Length: 292
Image (cartoon, rainbow, N blue to C red; front, top):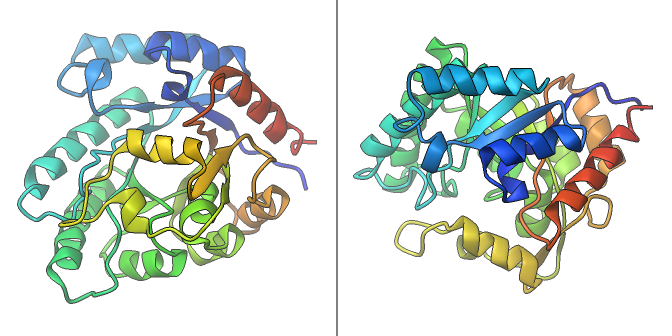
């Protein structure tokens, strides 16, 4: 097996800020970057006008490109019908920013898709994703849902109810291994028609855990990235580890991506650890070893 996919890095994983993170991504040998664009200097309301052109020029000057922006608004995803109008509007503005910066993908969490397709939470999520999907499709772009909160088959059933593929998938194999115990290799095959971006991350599941305790659920708790990172670091129920040290079968995972004809980015995410730069550099080398 010989991989031809480009390698990405989530800039925020370095914990250095955008500009320093971009330099670090170049230093470790990445081809592209994913950047959070929800708040701070990357917030669409802050990064306006000429600032966007300047940032794009800076990134291109480093010989990098943007694989995707992260537009995860946390909380309850799109489970809360009352909160959704503001979140949908913000998501659209993040997608507008993404396109101006040269990518057509925004990754996000939408909340756990409920089992009850007739309930109000499912309906709220469905309506929000339908609106976002139609908007994305009009721009030849995608909102990409990150895998992990529910099994791949259930996520596919939900996506199949939408009128376009404007809402698609950001495939994260470690989330599946750590939280639901789902098989990433079969998950790739199940979601083959929707995968537009991927994360490369590894982890172990130490005991069964309720996805609601990780990702939150309306009326239960809200999703908190800091809390998830702390859970992944503590090893109470699951543990995120450097590539090759966990339970993701990367040879089989990469082979499955090749089998479905995926040609997009393999983007490294490292949410824990005392030396993320070192772990990310090793992860780049790990993926490069499959390039032959």
